[in-house]
Amino acid sequence: DEFLAELTRWLDVIAEAPSTWPKWPDAPDMVPPIRKVLTDRFPYAIAYQASSSRLWILAFAHTSRRPFYWATRLGTREPEQ
Image (cartoon, rainbow, N blue to C red):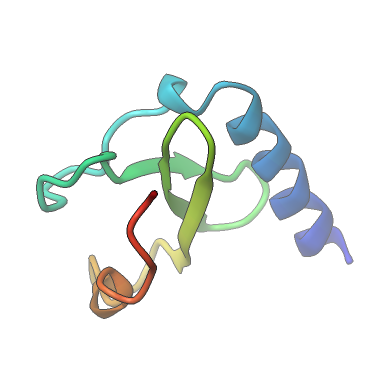
């Protein structure tokens, strides 16, 4: 329950100002860029992309795993219309 509450809180924070958070280091150049925010209580990063009308959550990535283990999912969403 606490983990879910933490992630939900961060999703609300991201949604308020998505361009505030830094681009994910070494992420492929994409439009919109892949950004990253680290949670406070748990060792997770949230990978996301944000346009003016949508927020795509790409991964809730454990920070001890290898970088971009989730990157195979990048081509699975529909392009913005």
